[in-house]
Length: 208
Image (cartoon, rainbow, N blue to C red; front, top):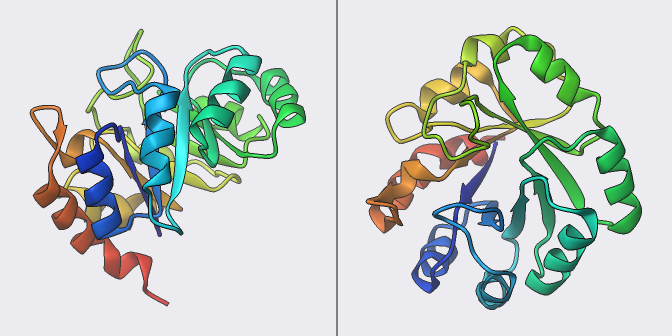
């Protein structure tokens, strides 16, 4: 089980990350309350402990811009959270050697089937909210996910917190978990919430 803590933007956030050591962190480069500049992400990335990978989140960004921002920030993984299609992903792969994750906002099994054919290295399965590409705080439809055959390894996102993470893992059985709002207080990353969520998930991460 992997875990990604998303929406990292402060020096204090990196200190918490280095202390509790998730597998991935997320820098959001798309318009959002958690948006960060590539230059600031680069500074934070330099202070990130070895072994923790960074993911850059983009929404409907031109490919050349994605490549440029990734190079400036030093991020290890590219996450596409918009309407990017197979043609876009194929072109992006020709311009970068980074792993590519594709987010899918689920309303029905067909959404997952379509995303599964895009050629991404991983999927991130999130909740659906009209006109909002992510960060809704709304729980995804776990029942749809559980009963859909998914060939691409996937992270589960959407409204996950200390109160439901064990149920999410047990019911959906994802490759990984993605959390942002569930480790915040008033929009700011909260050390105690990070500590608690990591203590809950660590037995699943290290269970052989």
